[in-house]
Each structure stands twice: as C-alpha cells, then as structure tokens.
Image (cartoon, rainbow, N blue to C red; front, side):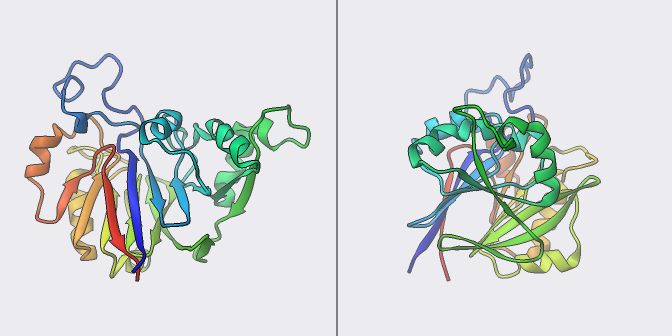
Length: 260
C-alpha cells in the first residue's frame, strides 16, 4: 500500500524560537525540540513532494533536511512568516528548468503580486523567480501529482486561512476558529496537525487548551501541535501533560501513514 509522509520543516510562530534578545528558559534551552523555525511542512508520496508555506527560514529548512526538489508549493495565507521565502525557490527553479507551481487563493495572489511585483512583471530581470500560479477555489479539490488536496477553510482572527487534507493527513495552521461544515472534512483522518500558540488567549490563534478541545472534537487519533511560541513552555514538560494521542511537534519530526 502506498504511503504518505509529513516532514515538519518548522514548528514555530512568526518570531521563531529562540526569539531575538530573549533569555527565557525556552529560548535558552539546549533541547533541539525547543528550537523552532517558522511553520512549514513537506507532504510527500513516492512521486510527489509538496511544501505547505514558504516562510523566511525556507532556505535553512531545505538545507537542513537535505531536500533538493519540490513539485509545488501550497500556501495557507499571505502573512509574511508563511510567504516571505518565495524568492529562495529560485535554485529549485533553475535546477528543474521550469517555473515553480504555487497554489493559492485569489486573495493571496493579489497580495503576492504586490510583495513580489518583480516576479510577476512581463519583463522580469534575469534570475528573478518565476511562478506558475494555480488558483485554489474553495471548496473544490485539486490535484498535485498523485496527491488529492481538499481545502479546509478556517478563521485566523478576522482573516481567512486555508488548511488542507491530503489522504489521511490534515494540516491546519494559524487557526482561531472553523465552522462545523468545514470541520466535517477532517472526519476519518489519521493524523491532524493544528496550531497551539501559547497558554494565554490570542485574538488570531488557538491556545493550547483550545487546540486540544478542537482536536478532540474531530476524533482524529494522532494529533500534533505546531506554530508554537516560546510562551507555551518547554517541549519536554508540556508534551508530558497532553492527552493520550497528542504531542507537540518539533522541527525535523517525520510522520507517515498509509494512503487509502
């Protein structure tokens, strides 16, 4: 039976962990699980490798993972910690001799055409990145190689944010709410990844308790929390307090599951 893997390239929030200038016990921890680059994952099957979000740590993440190829990038939303690494896709474009396929909603595309105007102009300078924009039209599914992607719409404060289901795996980040209709798309999954920023309330992100409640409402047996700030606590201590079947994700963690 074919399998699917999920590699956590980054599990941190917008500032990453450690935070510049912070001397807290988390930021000074020597546990590698407490060192978090900005949130991103790679979804891979035997023939297709896809990145979800491409933040400012993308170059470092690819080098650390020894990764040399991507077939596409899928974006959740337009915040800088999720898109600012798009220029660093250039070496892959040069090696693959084609534009990089990037899936996004029309809202995200409108913003990226402003942020990366030099990549979208008709007369690009030599060496500029070139993107093949593919539109995500929620709730329509889309295909990348042998992977079928189901978009799951969430709420990120007052912003729309896209999560995704690929076979038995669901990835949700920067989430503060979701309608029951969208939550139904998670039913029957084997692995759920969802953000858990910190313990105290935040206007645009789940707290750890909210993330636990949300995960329990889905019935997914394996749950991993991501987009974690240094305010959540030490990985070793917090992971032990979680309900059965739930864990804090960490950079470099790989999960695998059988495809149906």
